[in-house]
Image (cartoon, rainbow, N blue to C red; front, side, top):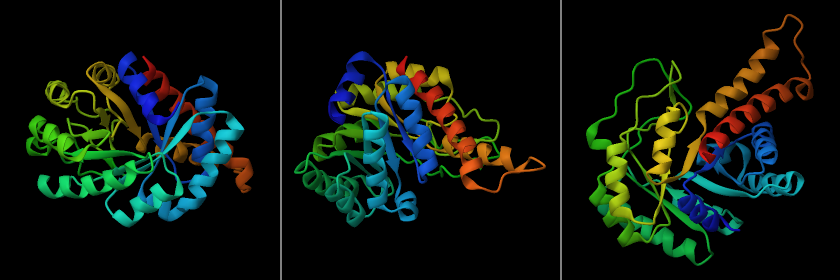
Length: 283
């Protein structure tokens, strides 16, 4: 099955595929070990920042090797790209999907640029995820104040309908009270499920995507999947898990200095968090 087939199945059976971002081999191993244990397909995300560190060719090579090693169906998605050159590179090198984040543009400009990307990507059977509505936060941050979403940043259902009709995107990332990063207490504000219901009515069978899944309440995740979300992105919680694995070693009086001795702790924590999320999304 290709990625589109899995997304269609998720839509039909009311579950969601998890997208798990990585920028190191250890994160990737933890994600793959979780998928292998649960025998589930996964989407692997790399943002422009992550591939600028790891390298786009290296990311693809590591994923291909890991797919063979762990016998897992995995698909690479370029996450939150704004530059057409990076998107074209990912398409040409073999990514399964690309996400163009045009949410910072006017709706008209977003439609125009997304349409160009869709035309290029679809020639190579690569899926395109667009974005309508603003998610202005960062997945590398833990917010120590209660986060408030501005009403004007939420996705407007009619804008979503027009965007899909005029661009032909396969997936749509929406803003319904979700945000990148996580609140200090680890539990983000509730999602606007009423807005999700309205968007779903306007968007039909287009795959709906929830960014900023880290910290989102479990009950909201379950309800969002039933209301039409078929892909959920997780990054911040994996970064925290990775950090916790490293921290555990270096807090010891006689800590390990050899990376091959302490990095397995980070892999283990990433694996555990990924298992938790896959189980939650599988319903």
